[in-house]
Amino acid sequence: MNILVLNCGSSSVKFQLINMENEAVVAKGIVEELGRPQSKFKYKANGKEDYVDTTAVADHEAALIKILNILMHPQYGVIVDKREITGIGHRVVHGGSEFASSILIDEQVIDGIRTCIPLSPLHNPANLTGIEVAEKLLSGIPQVAVFDTSHGATLPPEAYTYAIPSKWRDTYKIRRYGFHGTSHSYVAKKAAELLGKPASELRIVTCHLGNGASISAVKFGHCVETSMGLTPLEGLVMGTRSGDIDPAIIPFIGRHEKLTMEEIDAHLNKKSGMMALTGDSDFRIIEERAEKGSAADILALDIYVHRIKKYIGAYAFVMGGLDAIVFTAGIGEKSSYVRSRVLADMEDLGIILDEQANQKNDLHISTGRVKAMVIPTNEELKIARDTKQVLGL
Ligand code: ADP
Image (cartoon, rainbow, N blue to C red; front, side, top):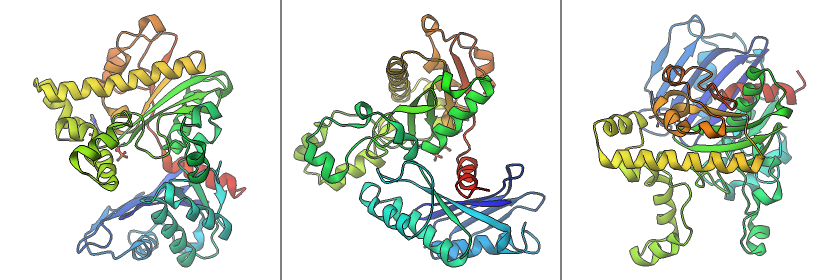
């Protein structure tokens, strides 16, 4: 039983074909730079030669045609007929308050995803295009939407309500939604499995530290706090996003620099965070320069680590205790430096870093009462599992 997982961005389509009998990735790849004179197509399949090409791919439909062609290709392919795809799982970024969990896609669901476009103007339109194109090219194969926001659907009102005028909240559905939900819920569940305890007995902080970064508090199996808000801008310092700032900075800088709202929005999302502090968003470069004594990079890493510590401390208090901290995504999985700094000097709170294990990116990196763990995220597998479950397979 094969599930095709599709993650459609504004100019890219990522895919994985997963055999759900053993949860093995049969084939995977990415089509990037859609609509450009040269696109990038990369494909890997079990037991086959890797395939790469740079011919232009006009749009999402052309990308999916390309993906299906290679999946069924005599030399590179892994299936002979489309009907070997049992279901399709789509990553959908914003489900608003409409969707609290993964759902079988029909006309009503498509309309619901469309109504969430104002909440995620960059991502939801691309996700919808992916659904429409898959419906056209793979008609008859059931499709499931898996939302980045549904992990946050269990947030209690005191965590999701902003203290702003009720008209704004009601009219525009402004509240904390949270993102990276598939990743947070995947690693939280995996942590419970690996610790050999039911999720219902654990208070876990999950740190998803990639280009985008967020942190969530999972108390007894349910997300009770998360750092991203109405949009993925709030919370931690990120590659190019500011994370938390005093909201008064926005009108202040608008007045003084004569910037429009759109310009400020673009600055906070694309030209802030580590990029603004160091000129780069790649942690390998930033860590290397900090090691050589670059003051700007050292300060940026101090700020980055400080923000994570602040959130972990707050979330431990919100949950009334802490049993495990999980690090995941590019930086969380690979930066022993960041993990070591975040977990330093926490002995009084039951966290004793095992620096040797940490250096090796081992699963368990602490020896105290609170377990610190490095768990590679697998959002595609979580989407495929949800798809299988929703389809009752
Ligand atoms: P995305 O959010 O785009 O999926 P990833 O989860 O792939 O991002 O994480 C990308 C980040 O991981 C980048 O900042 C990159 O520099 C960082 N990263 C990757 N490998 C390492 C490493 N060995 N050490 C430190 N940071 C790393």
